[in-house]
Image 1: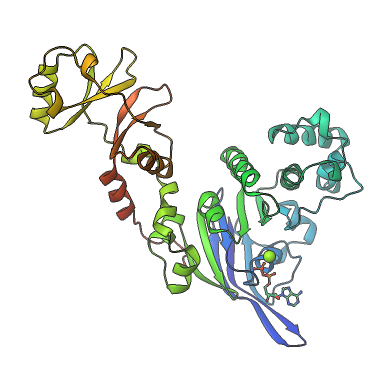
Image 2 (image 1 turned 90 degrees about the horizontal axis):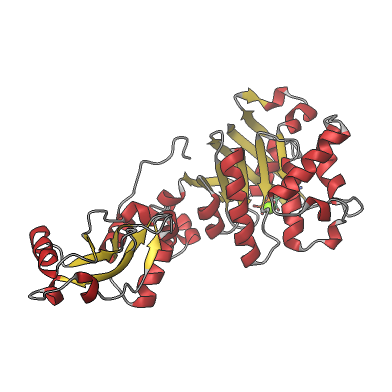
Length: 377
Ligand SMILES: Nc1ncnc2c1ncn2[C@@H]1O[C@H](COP(=O)(O)OP(=O)(O)O)[C@@H](O)[C@H]1O
Ligand SMILES: [Mg+2]
């Protein structure tokens, strides 16, 4: 848990006083990722640096796991905090192994333990330790360096991570890959993370909660979905973007909108039986499934009316299906690509689980409002 209470920072400059943090109140529950989001100069980096005391606060308090950090010395404090800085910041004259071992060494780990840890972490992010441990940062691509920057902060296994635009310096495609890797890692490690970003898409993807900053103040502190569904004021609405409803598509999975009661019939079922079933259930379409319960086609009530024979022979091929785990962006994209109003949804084994309709997607975007998060500013 990280809690900020009335945290304030003013800088005296030749041009007057700058308020970089203005009585910031917020709490990040243990194991969650909170994104500090806002335009350049709004105070995100300053907020992070006050937490590990690279910048002394002007006033206010910082608690980590209920402990007032002003009572701890710098070493005690930073032992519990991993820090990923904005410009990666690997030491160019040290090998990757030496870079990763900096903090474990400071903490007095024995060399063997630190080296083992370095190798494990590299392998964890898909960098072959035998290949990379003895290289120098300049021999790595930007994306590889960024991975090393993140695992260096994780090396001593701190419960709290501060990450300042950790994926900012890489191209969009690699950024998506690293974001996905990081989320997978976080699902296991469950660190308490403050993560700075200026990118709403990254924030929505990575954050359990998002704090929108403006000129040192929090404008809204909320779940990504509530933020997009109910921006608290025009500044927030403008910042999240006019396409905020579309952005919500990535927050809902196919599983959450699938109609599991949609009729499914075996290939060998007679058309007459299917027609009667559709009439009694008030449905227009039946999905035809094979012996392994995979969707293979569909029939409509209109077309099979009066037909004889098996629906397996009368079925149209399915234009598209999506896995249950897909988000609604993928669902809508398939619907538009194939110009269809519904599609079949399958589980991990490819078995049919139901259908998703366009009206169900629209309804999902209208609903899902929950009360603002506790501790909202
Ligand atoms: N060391 C400093 N001296 C004077 N002003 C500073 C200093 N560090 C940051 N600032 C000012 O504080 C404000 C917040 O900066 P910063 O926290 O770096 O913003 P962000 O990370 O959101 O871009 C800015 O107006 C910046 O110019
Ligand atoms: Mg910054």
